[in-house]
Image (tube, rainbow, N blue to C red; front, side, top):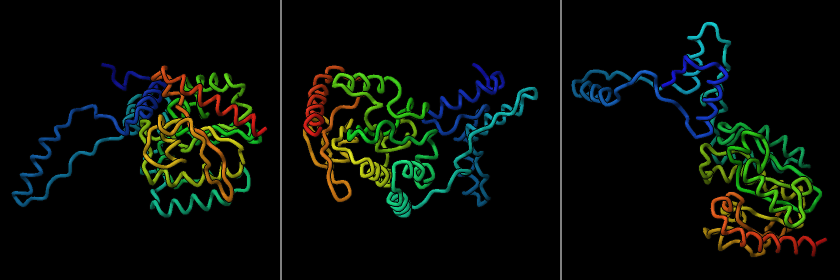
Length: 294
């Protein structure tokens, strides 16, 4: 077993980032702690009327890395990421939603909206994410593709639709004569949830004003929605992507509406390649609508 004392600061930082990407919020102690014995002692103390000793706090991953580096006198200091307590305090959900709505509606252009999103600290997802991901590509194309939320590759590289899913999306778009630089790509949620978990309802409500404002400012003529989460977000209901895909629906944006069609997310197709034929049907319908609106 490798001890943290045997690793260099760079190796320790890489290990810490690996655990963070996996959704680990703290590591085990180097020395074993018998929590059952602690609980038994606390119970016995309460029964005897004595004040119970507080259990030993579990050190955070960041503090373990910092302590490990301190024990290496010849190694350079490693800057540990801020702990949760050092980050921005949590804001009540309703207040955060109001702040998000105000920040989004105050933006008069996509660059202003990007700056507002990067300055916004009302969503706890931002505390655990490396990157704030905003729309990329050509906002004047009239074509917008929206995914659910960043994955590990997106968060690491600071780009929407990175990694294997992004490569497959590039091939999907290329098959109908589109390239990512020629359209606008974005996500409903701008921050990767820890461990790729589903965002909570309050987190979704906080992020909603920003994606709706993105659409309003970009003024696309057609929308392609990728995946189950994105389709439910815009269409409502609890149906699966297989029931929601392939049908054109109008999405209300500001004072107008935009036609949108949903299809499977590239990650769904990597998991179940047999569904590529369904996605191809949706892409062809998307291409026909683009040509009709040209």
